[in-house]
Image 1 (tube, rainbow, N blue to C red):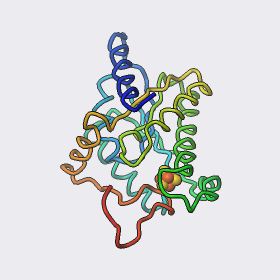
Image 2: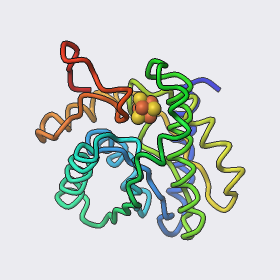
Image 3: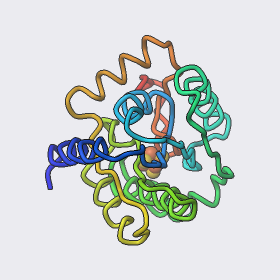
Length: 209
Ligand code: SF4
C-alpha cells in the first residue's frame, strides 16, 4: 500500500464511524503535544479518546517530563474530556533491544523497533481495557516512516484482535503543516530531537522539529 492509501483508509473509516450510534473508544499513543495537535483535531469529533503516553525512549528523564507536562497543559486547555494514562518510565529497560543499533541513522532499523515497541505496549493496554480502536500520532511526523508505522499497526491488529487499528497518515493534506502552525501559534515547547540519546543533535545542528 502507498502512503496516500493510508490517508484514504482513515477517511473511509471515519465515514463508517459517523454512521454509528455512539462514538467508539480510541486509545491514542501520543509522544508529545506538537505531534498531537493535528491528529486530535482530526479524531476528536469521532472518537472517545484516551491518550497513552508510553515514551520510555525519551532521554533524559527531564526531557520526557517536559514533553509530558506540555501535553498535559494542552489537553487541560483544549481537550479537558481526554484522560491521559502514563505508564512507568523505564529508559534503561526500554533501550536494551535498541542498543545494538545505536550507530544507525534516525529512520532506520532502530527506529522501526522503537515504533513497534511503543505501539505494542499501547495496543496491549487497549486490548486489556476494552478499547474499540488503537492508533498513534506518529504518522504526523515528517521524520517518521508512515508505511512502517501502518505495517506495524496492521501486524498488531492480528496480535490483539479485539481492537481495530486505525490506519492513518496524518501528515498528508497539509496535516504536518497545520499541526506545526498550531504548535507555533500556541508557543508550545517543541523538541529539538526525536527522543533517545542516539538522536540528540550536535551543538551546531540544533533546530526545532
Ligand atoms: S531516533 Fe526516535 S524513533 Fe529512533 S530509536 Fe531514537 S527515539 Fe526511537
